[in-house]
Amino acid sequence: MRLASQQDKPGLKVSVIVTGISLCFSLTVYISLYYVAFYIVMTGLFALSIYVLMYTLDPYEPDYQDRLHSPGKRIPVDIFYNMSDQHKGFNQLNQCHPVLAYNDTTQTHTNHHSCTQGHYFFQKKFEAPGHTKWACPFTQSMLGNCSGLEDPSFGYNGSEPCVIIKMNRIINFLPNNGTGMAPYVNCTVLVSMEYFPKNGTLDLSYFPYYGRKAQPTYINPLVAVKIHLVQEREAKIQCRVVAHNIAYQNFYDPYEGKVIFHIRASS
Image 1 (cartoon, rainbow, N blue to C red):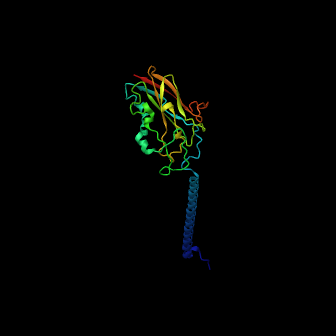
Image 2: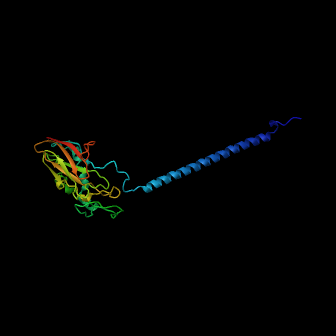
Image 3: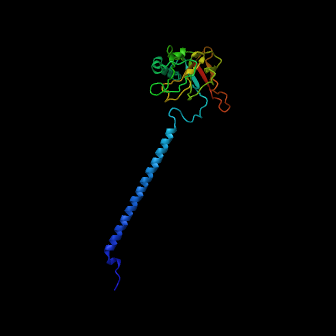
């Protein structure tokens, strides 16, 4: 008598193969379900962490504002123009054209809130339309002879060009520590000049600035400097905004709080 071999039992071989296939399929399903559940949990945790992070952020004010303590001034560094060739002076005229956004009619419709001159405009509540805060108007006509209303060339067709100075925005920045003195632009140059508005003042009613979302209609106050190059056709000018909280004597950054530029006119 001999023992039956595996070849003598074909039904056993088929059963082993079917069992192996079923086992592999089951393992594959279990592993797939495990990874599906794993990634669902990880996605949920990630979404929860983002939600908690966004919930703690103030949509109206950045949490970290340590990169800019003292606002800078915006102005082209070198201004060279030809009094008789308007095409060559076109690039210099471009730096004055943003005042067109300060159109008197536009500002009357956009920023019609009555602001008290000479005082900070503090706003604790969102009382303006659309859950925003009011912004004080600054009109083009306030720039006087540098408004472009009477002289669209802003003086670049002669020897009395205008330079527009704008101070960068910092949220909740107050130029003075309760002194009540408005900041003003002061330029050092050997030639004569005029300031618009009068005395180059940036009125306190434009401070503090509450951010783009809180004050979507806010516009920067401007100061226009009309330089009289009657005898001298070239000048080196240094301008700064004089205020208690605006630094300008920084050993590590000699250009903080002020701007130095050259202007030259040719005929």
